[in-house]
Image 1 (cartoon, rainbow, N blue to C red):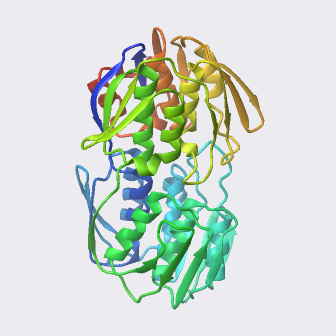
Image 2 (image 1 turned 30 degrees about the horizontal axis):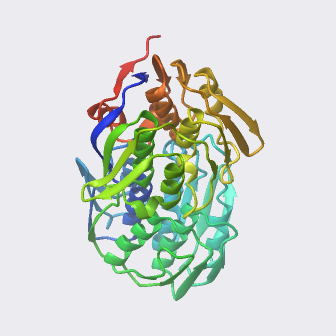
Image 3 (image 1 turned 120 degrees about the vertical axis):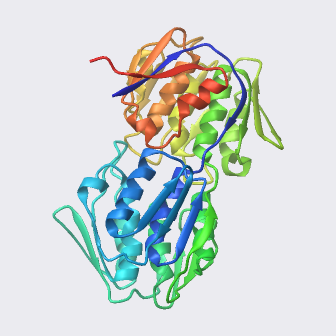
Length: 419
């Protein structure tokens, strides 16, 4: 297996470009299942989760061609209703095949998802919403089996603003009979990007980006061309990489409106952020300052940047408090930061981080996608050598991260693990 090896202490300087958003591309690719017609998707990052989604779609009957960051799909021959465990187990986003298959073919059989160590992430809200639209839903032998001659429009109030649940229900409603109103839904920009693509295909959707989305069902969708939005989590990771190392970097493709709460906290830490034509410039001349952060659904501080923020807190002056409200198991990176000298105490959903002058390099192990990014940032700031194992987690969501960091001055390389 691969490892990432980092010699810390080098300030970052130059320009780094953000790839397309993994969490926008996944539902957009899944939406190809909603009908025939050529769909051309640009700015798709070449990361493991999207490669897996391509394999799943091909298995279901979608013609998929990939050339660089462009994916071309044609789904007129889709007949299979089953997303099997062998693919779904590695990627939770496979659940996004459920709504499109059900609304188009009248039946779907999707394995309960795997692919994540950060909490239970139940899919009950997906199933509850589909049942309210008239589906018969059963969970048996590890599979979700749903049937409906044709889904019916309904009012659905979500108990929690689940992102994939919102996306699944939007896609299901596109071909349903009548009007579906979704209330208390997630408001992430990736959902608005999905809605923009669906609208290009002929869907009738109002309210994207708000907590109430209205979908008027249509009989069919056609092909369309779309460019995936930039990845705000990758952008936030690069901004934090600039902050933790000092120096002067510009993050190209960083949309500040997508990272408002993050920018506020990073500026509170003493980092200068400046927007200009090429992106967001990140500079820090003095020490980092302690802050308090609580993860919340968008537009709050994203849980997907929590591990990266904890790395910054580890070397900030004073005591920071980080509260995780989204996933109950998302502090798995803390013991690895301890190995690098960080002073962090966990009290339920709270992490109390007492900043130290400098971390020390150490062998560490990634536990999940975003935890691995947090360890990379810690390694960039640490004295000496840090070796991160299990970087296949990193490859699920970051495209050529070590190459991009190396281009702005980081001493980082990918190596094969010596067994």
